[in-house]
Image (cartoon, rainbow, N blue to C red; front, side, top):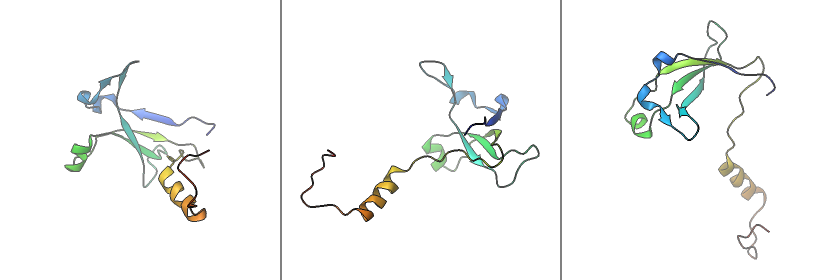
Length: 104
């Protein structure tokens, strides 16, 4: 992607207890979810404060703290899914009995 993705965060909505210290600063984990419809300003995604697995399993939802705009015709890159790729490779190339697990 050659153009920037614009992100706007309303810092007053951040749960300050979720901030954590890292080696180079203070961080907050967030997640961008695609919007079903474009917002008033052309926003394509909304930004949610990420929750722990326990809170998500309990039915809690992260606070919407902002939004982002992906330039027209571009989409953020999807996370690679190596497990699915391996399954496809296993279907295409069946394992040979004389092979061991060493890749070279």
